[in-house]
Image (tube, rainbow, N blue to C red):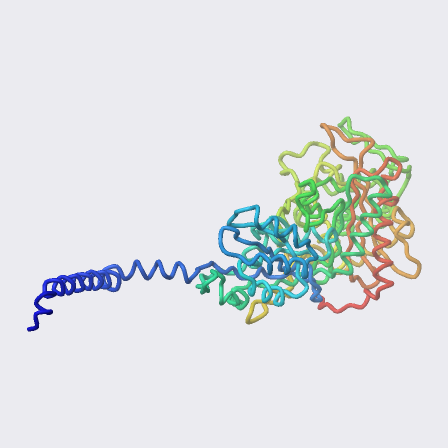
Length: 567
């Protein structure tokens, strides 16, 4: 060995030992990372390079019977910067100037003066070209874009009480949105997204390709054109009569399909929080009221089957005290002797009371129940009320007399529409329908079958009642519904409201129940107006003109061509 090697031998050994020692440390550390703690380190790396997210399928859409969109989804975006991380000030300022015409100096000042993990510059934007915007943002360091889907209702007030709305979490809170929330709501799935060096997601398109998660689309039975006719006529009638509210329904009597259902005052579901909660209520199914004379048809049907149709009833010149009671019944006009038909045509309370006395309590009660009073119709909408018919055992000496002209019982216009539909379709009480079909990604579920609850009258009886109701329009209390050249059958109702334990002499529910055209029934329309101005409170003055306006719109827009299957 050379003298030089011997001189440095000890130093070389020390260096070798140091290298070996460092190598052992590195190897042990490598072994610890790769073997002992590999799983934890892998998780830490994935946290920095991957991002997991629950992807929610898009909520199903709602259409009318003809495929017109009533409730859909609109994509909005938020654009923001995390100023606690690196960002390109110049390009961000230039982007907002070029794309949104925002002052570059102000943008730069905000970026440099605020240190936040989330600093939004634009929120709830509806971009003209979403993909183009996403591409522009993705190329700018530090700039981020978030997409979120919001429910959108193009017809606003017109069918809001039917369709309802969803809250900010996308949960249905009223109407169809609530009743069929599970059907409309999309499914969820966990997706893994990759991050690049700037912590941006590089496979964010996964959010856009999950159609299998989307909720089902619902096609309703309503026709949006008829819905518009009804809503606008109701609003006009309510304003003109200074009423508290108005509501109405149009149904196809051959199959029970609801073609329009509306109420006023209404609300815009796109801004539902700006309205009183009472505006959300669908009064056609949720407002119980004493119907007044529109319910007289039930007693007249019984009378035709059990009494001599040619007999006359003494209507006492418009004032009659029920025997063995303190109750006096009055008519809006005095009549002496009237036949069964004329009692309905002229809407004589005295006459209908005398008919009910001959029919008896049990017959009156059984008929009310047979026509569905006191029971829900079963329509697929939330908040339906049953109406009320007291148990026969609790009836007083006068109950069977006054229920025959619509007092001491309550009903909804949905129930009333099914009663008049049974008159129009030869005697079948139907279950009403609001859903026509449901579409999933693979198929349609069709709900076009007719659901008959029971047979409530003969074909002959239905024809007889329609003829009488025609005369009630042309010769009786419904003259303001007349349209030259067309046959209309209908019955007015002017019911005193029961307030603070007694019947009001100033507040009324004014109604008109109708069948059109009565020569070949295609539509049943029911309208009620709550508390119109006194002297405008008669059903013929307030409600009948609303129905007439709806029918004129139908005529002018060729809605008398029938496309439905009859029973």
